[in-house]
Image (cartoon, one colour):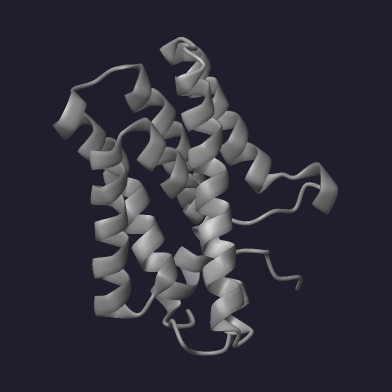
Length: 163
């Protein structure tokens, strides 16, 4: 089974520096695309489409035969650009769950599930809520096999080689 090009899988290779650069690069990609669209004065609808485009572009990159990562870091960058408070709340959730459980996938699943909740809490329901909900649902779907392994007690923990 081919590994996805995400920071967690790079970390499993044992190269912490490469994993950190992958994480930062993917998050920066998501943040920069949305930030530029905002600074160019595009409408909220166009900014939402840019957010979805950079996220789905990461999941299905043409240069990797449409087999990309799961999108966690890219989604974090998108969220930080769309709403820094939501982005920080989601990242805080991920960090807390990852630290407490040592399961990156569990952290991603819970953070994704809570992203629309945080969005509504901070901003009420709006068009941005729909964009973030689409990203969140997609993240959960992309982590479906991880969820199955978590439930079966077979998921790898952070710091362990993949089973």
